[in-house]
Length: 249
Length: 196
Image 1: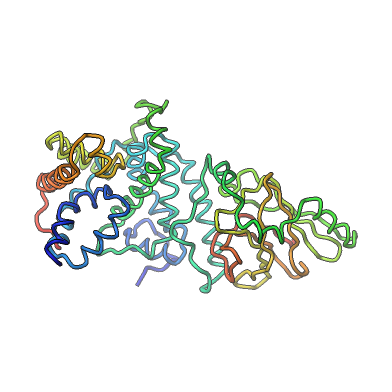
Image 2: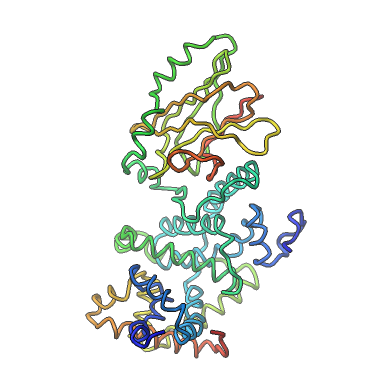
């Protein structure tokens, strides 16, 4: 610790604990703490008071629906992490979480993420229909997706499978993926511990519609899943699925 | 060793044990952490952002971050409750500094009537109410200029420079009041020895 450095930060301990240091100063103060015993000691002393402050807030009961929403996300992520096994990346610390209200409009207000990449794979709903028409009709079916309502409250998505076992996901009212991320399609096969990635990455058009061909044949696939992932996709899911489609009955 | 996930009575486990289970993806362990601390978390968030809707957003963001970052919990730096409420506090400050909530709070149509008193259901809650009363008294017992800057900073989410502008007071004075105020609060709360 140098004296001028300590003089500069000496009065900042309380502000730091109260969250009142400007963002630009936080890293500097934390760097100073690494070498300043006096500031570390004062930080520990004052933390007792700062940590007590939350308890002075008047008690207000959270609504039961809040827990329901949070647990819906947690349970779906736990399920996915379990399916992905040890190789799965834990979701990042501070992702944009699903939000109850204002969330969809907030995302829609953002610029379309990864527009160029998404454009390669984004198909209009009509095109998806055309692809379907190319397959055999015998055995064709449409399966409604199970949508994570916390993440996509108004989305309606179905998997249209033609007679040859080729599938197209068709969605409406989908939120665009968060900034810097893109939707990715995954296939879960019976007995597999982890879903396998596909190169099918897609965005959402401005009206919330999307359609994407699921690569390969769906014979032997138990579930089709969609998560949002970093641009370029992931080898193992990093987020809970926004939707899943059971392909076997 | 963390406890067996098949434990029939997760509710008997300490927070620190539940965090270990949560790190392994146990949603039930997380649920218990939520149930134990959601009241304090929501009260803090509501106190800071001023509306139920905004408080719900803050608590949702905070608890999902807790679920996703359980491995970052370091028991040597405090209890799970303190750690959780610290995350709530940071999320609420983020919300306040996005300014939206500041505006919403100022034009809130929900008012004080929204401050629904939590029902006193257990001895634990009764003890916490008593704890809150003691802390409130310690805060209210400070000289007004000290409690004011502490409240503006901690619950208002304002930086020391914003508070200095607001009060037309030098930044150094504001920082000094915060420091003095926290020292006095600590003394009043009866802290004895604190490790550096």
